[in-house]
Image (cartoon, rainbow, N blue to C red):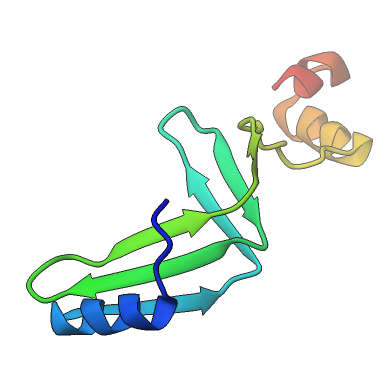
Length: 98
């Protein structure tokens, strides 16, 4: 990488109409199409805005990939099963399966 004075770089960017902002982020998450999630802890987040262009976001730092989790359904108690069995007129086993 070329050694560039940060102040000089900032001046050049301003002349080109590019605004740069660094965000104070504790965590950043990117959800991938596969359902996996990239989790960045204490990342450096830089947003660059150029006239007439959508903002560009640079996310720099170490990350971990989390696998998608299956959400657990509601907890079903034996009382719930008994109520369903009684109301539907079926056995406890059939109510439990339902």
